[in-house]
Length: 631
View 1 (cartoon, rainbow, N blue to C red):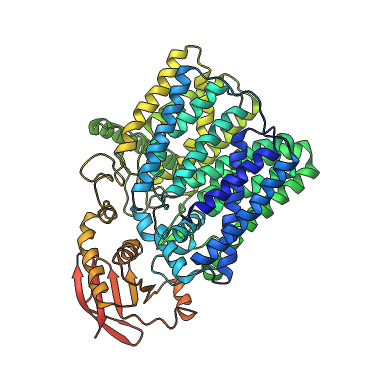
View 2: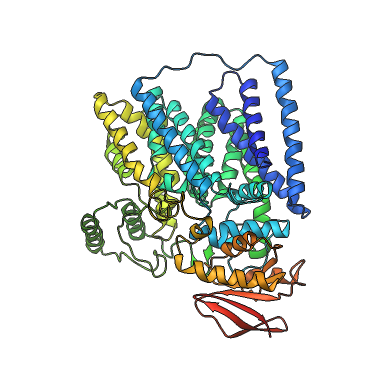
């Protein structure tokens, strides 16, 4: 299977780094190889896109080329350098070995879940997967006319990776595994961070367990959401940033810039989460050697900018802003006011998202308490200036990757935070803690509260894990420490098997349910209408299909169902676009597009529509989807 080529390149680079850097921890080699892999994938994507060469043969050829180059490098290092570091590996107790087995089992279950499940959450249907199939059709990642602007301006690295695997495999089987690979890498990276803070092997294992058992992480690890990918790049960023503070080598600055660039190219929240760490490292480097700090900073900035340059340029061309529209439809991502009150309210509500328990009565009491706290403070708990339109704060318990909470991990953070401060930790640990708190404050200060913010918090929980692992491992009463970790492992089990989008247990189990049905597990009422619409189009043998849909419309199932019908894949383009991307309708290859059928996905289906100079009339309508043919 050609999809193994990118994986083969990663392994070659990993072994190459291991052989050439004999004193490195193998986990550092893993992170470094991941950065090289991520940068190379970005460069390949941007290069091929410039010439509209994104296609199976071109991607296959260029991966074959870079693998050949990597193999030559591996042979060279093998002949020039001695074998990898042969230092003694640490010995583990029986309990620690059982913990490692527990981590591996969680990762295996999540990986199998991702492999068996189709991408099916709302974001995947609206833009994660939809942008990928548009790129393949257009042979370019350039912006195109679309009713769903998130397909254009939101940061695309995770979808770049999906694009390559989808082209090489001919299916979306690998789509969920980008997050899973990031989950594996993050677990390794967090244990390495714990080592950097002075944790012994026991503390490093504890840190890995804490990361692997984050409920939101488990649920996202088998999806196409991008928060775990961003978490992984941020872990790489923090690791190499800490190395840079002490070694001040240009190679580490390059790694910091690459990880920062990839984190930003994956998700815009990386700007917020990375900023305090950059301030910490910057002030530290300036105090040590201000001249070298200047050049190290320039290298970091240029590297991060270069990685994002293509996406910035595409956004600037369309929006006159490299960051894109900074809003979703008519809703801004940022708060309308920036006050102590708005910050306090957002902080309380963001923490409240992780307070949900399986007991509705307890959730009701907690929710009432937070509403009463807002009244005492004189703050509207659902102030439209700081709250997503038509959304209200509630405390719920969920097994869905969009809004699940991390209650046990929140309890650990809240209970250990004063302990960390009172025991007067090392300066680097204290500054790291300040950076985490600062990142959370910036998040609450800037971003408008949403009920699905809990998934955006994943990088913060991940970066807390090395501190928690270090502290719990230092508890004098080992049985208490062991009990804390066992509770986390046991508490994570339901999230591995009861994922709402990818359940292993129940009537809709991924083991017994067809992929077609699983596509609509979050919106089951759409399954019949979509299948009917696609069968109708397949029978009509239409080769050009126009799309008109609301901003959150489920577009990807149309592509997936058409592909499954064993007919020649038609061309699908958004028509009658009225937003900013309409400017792309006049360029190649969209200006000459004339649909022989139009699909409308909306709550209000008209009886006829006009596209260009042609009138189309309704031929099939069911639920919120309609098919129109020329009159």
